[in-house]
Length: 297
Image 1: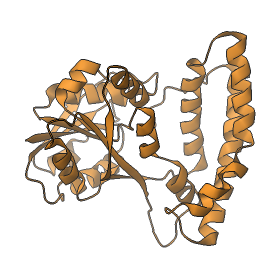
Image 2: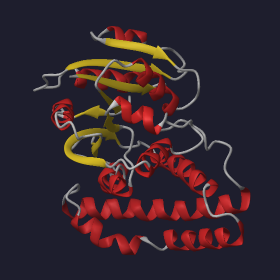
Image 3: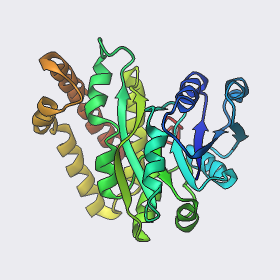
Image 4: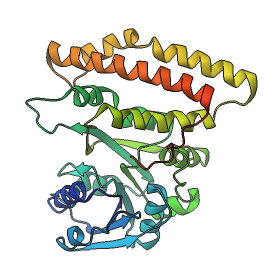
């Protein structure tokens, strides 16, 4: 078996360095591994970073978005399995082992794993880290809905050929691809120990940009006409008033510990839901923001 690891990259050299170092520290992997980094018109190509590691191929894709970058990597890959991870993420040391183990079963077609927040300092998690530990990257829930985040996804090449390429930057390409695969009868299997770590955002403005993008995607896909507007207004009101419903989740989540951490996470949740309600109301009045196509995965 040969596993092709495909990494889209956009101005993330430091994070890519960490990702590649963790990929080269994988354990208990019998399969061959090739690593393909696809730069997506960064300020500079990460040639120096990639040159530090053996077996890394660096490509360039000018079409904006991680989807087109993944497509080029997949088209170049020689593997029996395509494994996707993002440049700003890093894998658990057994990530490839669990991918190899899953695809040893000839019936396995697509798998997705757990995505956890990697704390910069586990002894002093930040306001945003605690919130994102509970509420971001809930890949198990996404997979139940029929799609997986593309930062922790693996499949056989013939599945990608059948479903078709990842979409461009104008839509949520992971959800789009997953739902297309579901419509064709594929099922994404959740592999819990297939873990990827994603750093939490450092500033609230980074989180708000993420929600601006997701809200724009949802707004463009809403039901047209007055009924669609009415549903959007209802969702806006529901989101703004939803933090109290989340108290049991915050109190019982295994991803944070202690009352102080839970209270901090809840405070951030309130701020996020307030912003989301504001952004949903704003887009209804003004239309999608001009920056909704930023690549800020």
